[in-house]
Length: 164
Length: 164
Image 1 (cartoon, chains in turn red, brown):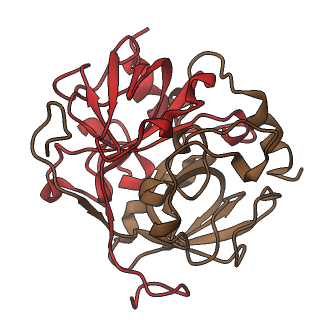
Image 2 (cartoon, one colour):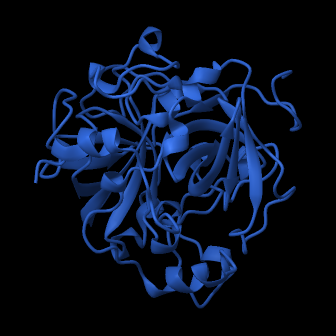
């Protein structure tokens, strides 16, 4: 591809669900996700022992597809998050909203239980029926290194997100 | 799909690079990533203002494709991480290694600078030429909530990872 500066040839990549969200919210809402409990059911294509040892971790990171977002809704350029005119217009890569290229979500949640082919999680901000593309353990050493700073508008935006 | 418990119909999803890693390491290595500095070049398909406002964040989260992993190398079931027989055999979802379904990586790194269409980052554990599928700001409120616990083998595995 002409747009790739110095790598090998690359074609579009196809990904497929490894699991599905079952339960939790039926529709996307912006706030108060902390108490939501949902289940992740392994897809039939994945063997059960892919989960072996996961129960030793307190949290998981879930990569998922914002499957309800139409490709035509995706925006790139600067806009005001949640249409708040008092917050700056920022590009899609300075936000974590849904209408983003590739429609990929990444969220951390608590892992409450691992049963055969089913995980029980709390605080996952993904709705019932969401296709999950990967599950990774949260590892302390992979958390941000050094102080995390963010602009004031983001702190305001997050104030009601978890609702606790 | 028969394997989806209760969502709408879903076909395989196609994703495309939004940016590329330029510089840093030429080959994957397991350890001592902390000092690596690399650049992320926006793909030609992405407008520049997708980065507007990102400079106000100290860290970013990068979702990328382990493009050097052959699909035939992907493992699911329980194996010993880094072939260490003294560590437990765990499934791919209890590890963060490369040979995983969908070959998706998620890493947090420091954002050093934002110039026109180019980000400069430190501590990104992805090699030169890696296709990037999404860039998100690291937001404090999305970090793990509550104490993060992990098994001893993971703490041992991570001891040399950053090399500082």
